Length: 193
Length: 241
Image 1 (cartoon, one colour):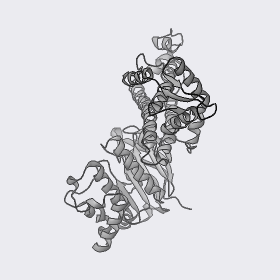
Image 2: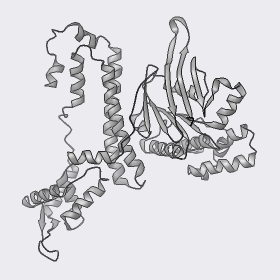
Image 3: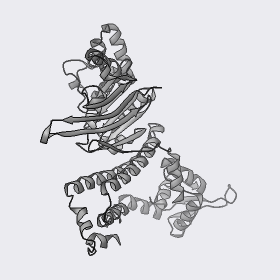
Image 4: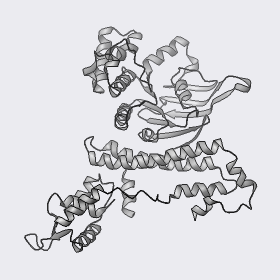
């Protein structure tokens, strides 16, 4: 989640104070992504330094600063919206690494391990689904944020399911490691480092 | 208090000798009123067999099935059929609506088979369809309805009357994810009104609507989720990041 760009987006609606930006950010992400007020102000300071927002401090609200987006900020926001997110190279996935490592360790029940992770992920999914179930049906921003998390987590469960089937179809994979404890590190082990 | 559904040490064997298949092995499961339980597992794990046995559409090779405390093996075949019609509602992947009947006739069919007079059945059927927001389609035929509407009609048929147990096998079929969510909201709403629900699925997103997820593998219950701690724990976790 790009906090600077989210704040620029909120400011594109008109000038706002920091506290209001914090409240709007949280309410529009269904409060799934909490943001503390300190983060808001440090981000705003950076945006101001880069000329993307400006302040009109000291008007009628005491010492509080009101922030407005600049034309450079508008351009930055428009460009960011159209820039594809960074999907390549893939993040180094801890769960993938754990499974690759487990394949090398004698005596590990891989299916039990996969199930332990599957249960954990499904339990988190239940919690996101509950957020969605308990929210108003027309709370679209919250549904979008919860959906994004649910699809991401579902992909993990599907990967675990696929791993389960692959390892069941190739039972020789794990026992091979058991049979040869002097096994040299494999490419899989290299990845895990 | 008795559970709405109890399975004790249920096993199911198909075939014999070298072609013998153990679809279920000593499965224990109980579902309370007001609870939605999802049974998750890969194809061939035995989840559909579990559902047909729970719904008395099939008999176990061994073990006991209790619906509302009544052991299905202890009642006559015709009493079992009556129980199926009165106490148990089924939702299938392909909706299973009869094409020659209107939506409302599909919904009222189980009531009429049970001897309820047509007028009373109609009133109860319309009520169930209203609950699912499809009453306006009462006189349409299944092929005149969208996939989502057909599944709502199928759910209305499953909850019509005084059913205490709702069994659903991959109930969202080929619906898109938003319509699938609608179906799960309806099943959840039905269980919150006091019905016990069991949903069989291989999809984690559907299963995550349940209060409890039971994992089935090779005919065994291998695991289940703990009681959900509630959404506030996610927000707390987020703040620590």
